[in-house]
Amino acid sequence: MIRRSVVAVGLGGFLLVAAAASGSAQPPGGGPGGPGGFMPPWEQAPRKLLAQFDKNGDGWLNAVERQAARDSLKKDAGQRGPGGFGPGGFGPGGRVKEAPRPGPKVSPVDVQTYPGAGLYDPAVLRTLFLDFEGKDWEAEVQDFHGTDVEVPATLTVDGKVYPNVGVHFRGMSSYGMVPAGSKRSFNLSMDFADPKQRLGGYKTLNLLNSHDDPSFLSTVLYSELARRHTPTPKANFVKVVVNGESWGVYPNVQQFDKQFLAENYQTDKGTRWKVRGSPGGGGGLDYLGDKPEDYKRRYTIKSADGEKPWQALIHLCKVLDQTPADKLEAALKPILDVDGLLWFLALDVALINNDGYWVRASDYTLYLDPKGKFHAVPHDMNEAFQPVGGGPGGPGGFGMRMPRPGEVLPSFVQDVLKMTDEQKKQLADLQKEVDGKLDALLTAPQKADLKRFSGPGGGTGGPVGPGGRPGGPGGPGGMAGPRGGNGIELDPLVALDDARKPLRSKVLAVTAFRAKYLANVKTIADESLDWKTLGPVVARYRALIDKEVEADTRKLDSLADFRRMTADEPVAAAPPGGRGPALSVRAFADQRRAYLLNHPEIKAAH
Image (tube, rainbow, N blue to C red):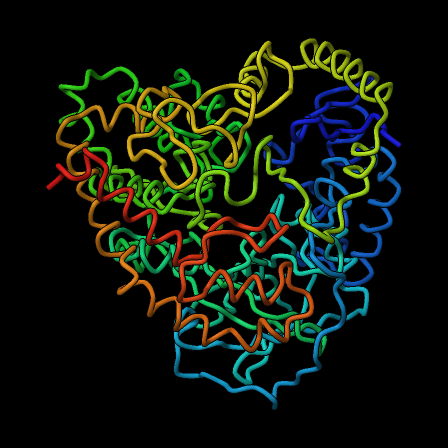
């Protein structure tokens, strides 16, 4: 049954539908996304529950306080609508190849310890033991997804016990499209109850579920290659055991925090921003005027707020927008780490980061150092090493792709696939009604944001493709637009005419910057994508995690997929009848390297 809820599925991909017969942009009480208004998850701030239910004032919720908060969420659940954008993600979820089942039992005495190795040592596979108070820990953590509440657990690592570590599920599609019982991404806060508690010197852990990455390697490989050239979060692998049961292997990615700054910039001072991911992007540093509030919806400040850093950010955007190309080099050098930026941009395109700046002008981080210079830092690295359209977000955009054989689809997707012609007409009529309500409901800046991922005519038909072309196939799997190319032949000079991405269109219009950028792309292709160099790295990681991937009962893809994707042979297609990623890591590296090194402007680069 198709309901008037926030998300419906269009015939070409995801169709954003703001429901609602009445209401404000964000309904009171319930999480945004049910009847009452439109608030996509990339626009949401966490729902604030902590202050309301922290009765003893200790800064976190104990079991009794959490139960009261959960009861409150259940009362409000009716306001969100089935499959809405409130806590719980995009909807029912369900992209796994087989039903999850309990994993092997493991205790701390069963595993090897590495007390002398760093937390992100790439040569070790450390085991993290999480023990929650209740057996329904997964349901509880799920209930608090999208809120400011973390669930405490005891963490044991290398034989040492760390009490009251805060745990929540992280991610958008990597959470919302994965059903309960399967591997979801974790965020761990070591300082949840004790501000001084650290693990190996770090207070935050990001454990990823390798959503749409059967190789498990995208984040770890990208980090290793990128860190040769520019500050990038470290990454390695860990094994996670929850309440005595193995949940398998997770990429473990460093947090963009003061510790990261201290390791890479010799200071922990300055201002940090996260540029949130969204289908329409919007965080490309395009100039929006001189009011900080117009930037605060797109750039999330992660350090002390204040007028001065926002004015510096606005100044950078204005310089990019209004400075002629022949004067931009001199104007940018005092306020932007151009050398670091050119490596950031080269890695983004050479390794085809399908969640990168070139696609959506989002999913990266910014750092303003104490001397007033900005630095662009990679953030989301889990959808690289695949051709455009070869991974998640196939034709149709917004992260939708055709189902794989035997894959369990979310119930609302199944509903759409069974629609009659009359139901399709009703859905189209509903879309028209919703578009009219959105037009009356949203402010001008919100309409501008919506238009960035809308189809022709301003409706909500399909996201903007990587090259800035509206409508039609969008997102990483869509058309790359002018100069974009498709598949493995993504043009290194993509988006040079896209005003929403001035770090490419404006910066690379400067002759000296463009030459250095092309030389960087050439270096990455020639050295990092050479299988003589990359192959041993892939083999090392494969050997490290292969047995654990085989034993993993919660993983999202099969063991055969993992071994195919990480094979030494250049496997160039998905298995017969399958719709997995198009290329193994070896096939990607070989084909991408050959294309780039034969590109006329790369061949001419020095």
